[in-house]
Structure formats: structure tokens, C-alpha cells
Length: 462
Image (cartoon, rainbow, N blue to C red):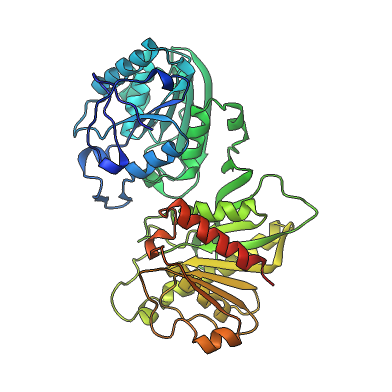
């Protein structure tokens, strides 16, 4: 939910697309947790539909939705171009003072800022000078800041998040040690998404979830975040994100590994490998199906989601015969899968590699369909979510399942005939109320639940 004051709060409604509405703070909300969210510079200077040349669209509304799910009172606005950092920080301080005046407790307030918004948040921390308010600074510190912004002094419960591949943000430990105000708590999280500064353009759980923990005053839970790679605990599911490297192809392969927090060591977990749809090389797509990957992990599977596209890759052709011009991209994806399986075998004795399932959406579904043809007798099942170009394998040695969208048909010959479906026990199921683009985290709760239920039924079938 969102709160707005008659004098100073600008309310962003997802459904009204940034129309400004005014209302008085409600005293009934005083016990809830409040978040001031201060976005990065790009949305300040562009519309929300415009794309950054390297990082794609800044998903401001999608980020807000992640915080909304957690029932925070969210205070935010899309700032005007050329906003003065210090003046805006003074404005936020007045907003916080107004909340305190109506009885909101100090530790119930969290200021989260990304990039330029993070610099605003740092000045809010300095000007407010209250050690009990929570702050999260994301991708917004460089060593030169000690000279360029020498009037910043951290104060409060401070969490900083930075991405290892991002030149615009590094560890702020030197800012902590030179700050002259009181810091009650201090924690840093280093991410390794390989998305550079683009990591904060997307609602990645890798940084969203630590923000949620901090804003809910779950400071001890933050101690469980591994400092070498991102470890997220949510609904008894652990997410590790790290990079593999295939030296034979000189290929970096980022992966996300979902597994149960307290899996039984005596029982091996069956492996599911997920392959995302085409994301135009923006990166981060391997984290864009969390409703599915997390649910599989909660149900006892070890789930690996592979980032198949890198920002340095050439774009996939959108013209020409797909089966010809896109085949090299599917081949590369199949090679990625093969490398990941063999690499995991070396260090994960608790995983059952005799019963592997591949799942893929759209372009990832095409590489999923190709894999058992290129590398036979490795996987037990494949599940495609609306793959449209690569022919599904027709064999009794493999269990094949495909969920189809309501709006985009497959190319001729991609789906087996009714006779072959019966002969080879291939299951093709059409989802009447789910479009092709609603099969990732963009789908509704009802759509996600339907897909999860269908996939679990297939995985548990004999």
C-alpha cells in the first residue's frame, strides 16, 4: 500500500501510472513498516518505457510491486529531471519528521536508494542524524566520494549493497570508518550477477530481499548472507548466485542455484535445470522465473537456472528462418547445459544426476528441446513452456511435456501429431488463460499457480 501526505507525499499507484493523489497519513498504519524508495537517475530523465542502451528498461514500477507484496507502506515518486540531490534529501527529512510527529517509530522507517537515489539517501542519513532509522544504499559509493562528497556522514542502521561487476559501486567500508555520526548497525552485501550497473534496473531478489530483511529489522538474518556470493533465505529456500567458466569455449555462465534450506542429507535431490526466454542480452533473466524455481525448490528439487545470454553476446536474429538463424543460439544453450551438469557433478554429491529434468520457456524451451538430441541419454524429462521453433523430440527414451500459451502458436512441425502424442506418451497442454509473455514472473498469481501445479504433476508422474 502507499501513503501520501497532503503537504509533501507523492503517491505512486501502479494502476494509475504515476498520477499524483493526496491523502492524510492514517494513524492505523503506524505499526507497519515504512519504506522511502529513491530510484536511480535514468527514470528521472526518461519515461518508464524508454530503454537504457546497455541496461534496458528501468523497471521502477516492478520494483515497487516487490515491496508492495510485503505489505510495506511505500513512499515514493518519479522525480523531476535534474533534481538537486541535497535539496531533495532535505525534503525527505521533512517527510520523515512528519511521520515521527504522528507517532511512527524510528526503526519502522527505512530509506532505500539506488544509484543517484542512493546518494540522496546518504544525505538523508547525514541531515536526519538519527541512529535508529534504517538505510539501504545500493550501487552508490566510490572511493573518490570521500573527497567529492566530503560532507556525507553515515548515521543509522546502514546496509550497503554493491555489485562486483559495477564500476559505480564498491565497498563503502571507508565511508563508515570516516563518518563522524553514530552508526548503530552496519552490513555490506556484495552481489555477483555480472550485470554491472544494470543490476539495480531490475527487481532482482538478490538485492530486493536483503532490503526487505533490513526494513523489517531482521538484522540477525542478514548475518546469514555469505560475503563471497549472494545467499538468500526465503520460505526455507536458499538461492546461491555465482559464475561458472567454460575454458574450452572461453564462456562465462552465471547460474542461480535454488535448494532447500534444510534438505535431508540422506536423500538425494533430483535436479531441475531451468532455461529462460530470450531477453535481448539485458541479463538477469535467469532470476525472472522465481515463482517457478523457488516453488520447485520448496518441493524438494535442486534447481539450477542458467543465464544463457551475456551483454557482450550478439543479438539473436529476429528475421530469417528461425530454425536456421537461431540454431547456433540453441546449440550454445545446449552446450551451457551440458557444461553445468558436468561441473555440478564434481562438487554436489547430494544431487541425483540420474533423474534430470530440463525446463525452458520460449527460446529456452527451444534449447531444451534440442538438448536431448545433441546430448542423448543424459536427461530423463523435458518440459517446454511455449517453445515455438525447435521440434519436440519424439522418443520413448524421454518423457516430454509442453505447456502452450493461449496466444502464440508453434511453427508447423514443432508439436507432434495426436497419433505420436499417444504412441510416445507426450503430453501437450494448452493454458486457456495464459499468454506467452505471462509465463515468467509477469504472470498473475492464478496463472503462476496453474503452471506450478501442472509441472509438479508431471514431475511426479511415472
